[in-house]
Structure formats: structure tokens, C-alpha cells
Length: 405
Image 1 (cartoon, rainbow, N blue to C red):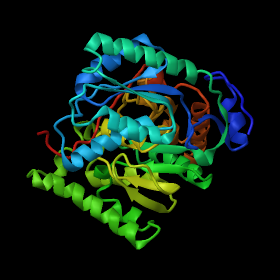
Image 2: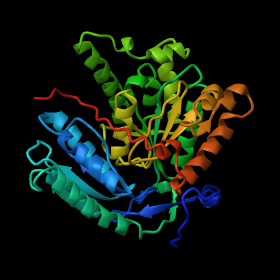
Image 3: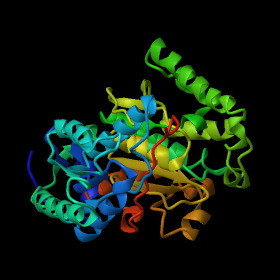
């Protein structure tokens, strides 16, 4: 396989590689392929997030995120947060990681670093307590990050098959057009990726309530079908344990204003993002799929939390449909924003990459818009920046499933 360098955003990259069923990516030591070459400054505790942020301001080529987790967590909540940290660092879009800790927290930086190192990528650990405070930590972290970025800059993109691509799918700020335009177009892309040997992740369990039977009927076996009903039931029971109906918060006020009448209507539209291929497995939050094809990740409907879960699970690119508009992005994976109607595409031109409103207007079919999105995926996978990346929209949030002690 030849090694070729292409400038970010060069016209023709996506279309040329698409014709050969390939894109230009970065091969990692574990065999996976990244579409970006980030050095991640990963804070394992909220106390370290500001130091991590300052390192990213000093060293070009680094990314990080702000969060409030990492200590006083126990049981399954601890395990899920740990899995998310490790998944973010292990994502193939990351060249190397500086794991930044305080020193006394529950989620120890060395434990997180040890799991990420199993991928074969370079990993370093810096501790605020061990390095004498904030200033010493920033200095040491920046020094290590600068060397890592220099090493990363030497790596060339190479031709990679679409079977090595994993896309996440998401809808946020949905409206009455979502299930008619952008979501079915993303379903076309999901099928296309699966047919080319890749993986498509469906998420947002909350927003599949009422449409679960459609997905269970597509399960590859009875075990997967049973799991579909189990995760839906568990999600509803979480709300009942709080003494509330999940439908009091979903659809959101914006969804209702956009024309959605009920959670079931919203779910039927959201399920369209899954296309029509068999459901191979149903995985936990931030878990890496064990099978190729269509995969369902059990996540909440909260946009940032479910986006983070899919990226931690290994998604290199996320397709995000919106009818009301959103600036959402990720520090690790490029997020391609797709408008469900032309009005919001024009109104939020700073944030939305693709317009699927032409389906509503009757000037394009679902398949035609889907093909345009496939071409955009090829461009972005090969280096083109999304609007969320350009605006440095580095959103991050973990689905917490337990109290802090």
C-alpha cells in the first residue's frame, strides 16, 4: 500500500479515493486507521483539566477537554468513566497521549495510561502532585507534548479501505423533517459503509423507545433481539425509579416547537439513521464493537454524552443530523453536521456542513443526498476539516450512572 501525503481540504481527495473505495488515513500500531493525527492531553480528574487546557494553548497539534469526573466514583459508574477515558485515548484518530492526573484521585492516571499503551501508541504520564504543582506540570506536559507532536507530524497518510471506517450517527435538535430527510439520508450512508465492510453505530436508546421492535426484527439472532428489549426497558425504568415519565423531557421543548408530537414519532424518525442492514450486536456505552456492520450502542439521548460514548467506542467520524441547529463537535472525531431543512442550513451556515432539506423540497432524492454525504465522508476522512473542527467545538461529557461519594 503506497504512502502518499495530501494537504488538508485539497479538492478532489474524497472523490478520487471514493472511486477506488479508499480514503487517506493514518495507520496505527494496532492496525486501526485514524482520520486525524491528534496528540491528546487527557486529564483523568477535573482538578487537572485547566492545566491540560493550558498545555493545548501552548502546543499546536494537541487537543483536550474539560470535564467534572475522575474522583469519588465507585462500581459500574467508575468502570464506565474509566472505559470512556481509555476509549478516548485509544481512538485511532489519536497519535499519542499525555495522561494528566492530580495524583490522589480514584481514576489513577497510570492505570488509564497502561490500558491505552496496549494499543502500541506513545503514552506519557504527568502528575500535578509529583511535579510540584500547576506550573511544573504545565512545563513538563508541554515539553512531552511538543516532542510527541513533532513525531506525529512525520507520519504520512496512506490509502485505506472504507472497511476500516467506523461512523457514529446522531440526531440532535430534531424537527418534523428529521425522519423524512436527513435521518433517512444518513441511513443510506450507514448501509453504504456496512456494504463496504465498515461499521455504523446507532445510539440514543432514549430516542428509540417506540421503535425498538423494528430493530429487534433486524437482529442477527435471538440473543441480540432480546437485548434490544432489555436496554429499552432498563432506560424507561431509570426514569420510573426517579418517579417521572421519560416523556416529560423527551421530546424536548425545541423538538415540540419543531413539529414533533411524541417520543414515539421522534423514535421512528431516529431509527431511520440505522438504514436497513441487520443489527449485529448491542454494546455498552463507550465499548468498542466486536463485530463489523450495524451496531447499537446503549447511550442516553443527551447529545454530548452519546457523542462521547461513540468516539470512545472507536468512531472516527460522526454524522449528526439537526433540524433546530447545533454547534456540537468533538475534540477527537470530526462531526459532520447535516441539516434536515434548508432554512436552518442557511440560518446556521457557520455550523452545518451538508443540507438535506432538498429532499423536503423535492429537488433531490434520499439516495442523492446520501451519496453527497458519502462523498463528504471521503473528503473529511482524508483531511478536510468540518465546521465544528474549524470553530474548535471540543465538546465532551460522560454518561454518569451512579452518584458521587
